[in-house]
Length: 437
Ligand code: IFM
Image (cartoon, rainbow, N blue to C red; front, side, top):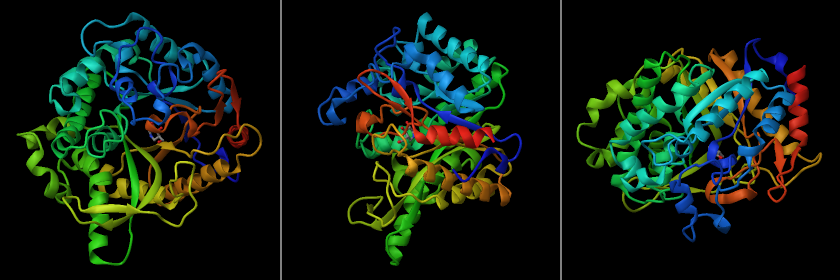
């Protein structure tokens, strides 16, 4: 790799990320059923109907996986806590095994000199709460606050940082408008409610964690650069609408106490009554912003109901996900978030990475080039004044890529899902060398 640790400021943190449902094995340790289990059990939702019951068996291999982080020379490990592992019914009696598991995970990080970066929710909603309407139900703010209290009373004294919800756009839009993720809805009213409630629940969790005396609390949003597919006024406006829905709605709520007009044009009639009164909770002060960035889209105008847009294929080289590689987008979002929204708050790249084919040996040069290109944009942002504190690769391990199953390989470490053998890829070794220098 071209870049190394010495290119970055002395306290800059390098991390790798995973999430609970994608690696742990939800069939183990008394975890309750989640909407991802039922979504995956419904034909047509997930390729090969793959699910997370075993996943990477991280539940039993946590120590080996943390050793891999340590040996890579990382400073931090970003993981998530499964709501259904901690509270199998979503509310009520905690599962002691689940609490013990996260306790051991945090201690395991600390023993290896890794800063534990916790995310409370990375998409596996307990089924009993899905039955009650899930993210469509405003009560999720209280359910999530209670879950936060239970898990953070146990590990909050030792985590380095915490964020309530990974990628609000995916939790709401992707899952309630596009229907690609659980609960698989395609309904504009459900979407509007989920988009607002996800921010409301974020704010409630921040309140709880502040109450527990925790610090270093942030929000993690995902971003996609929106090119206009052609020069027409209609395409430019469609791209701006896409940008508002994807990139500005959540930042607007968190940092400006408002939603973009371009989104309200379509969603206002469907937002829950009194939504404007929730900004005191939603916009509670944060200590940092997490930026997840992977790709760009080419947006064209389309007939039909709001948001009147579609995306078309673009010319750039693509990852195994068919996502165009556009590293400049990372610089764009780091500077845009800093200048227009977070205004001086530390920013962390909480996810960046690529899925590449099933390669174990030396041939992983595309991933190294991807990391290098994104590190270059992170450095550019630092030079431009962005207070960037860290860079997190997604993901430590090949894992369950949701509706696309186990064949999309994002890992620095190859996982053989038959034997659960872990084999560090060439990019792992290259990154280890870069971090050691
Ligand atoms: O695997 C996901 C992760 O769960 C959230 N961010 C994007 C990754 C790649 O799609």
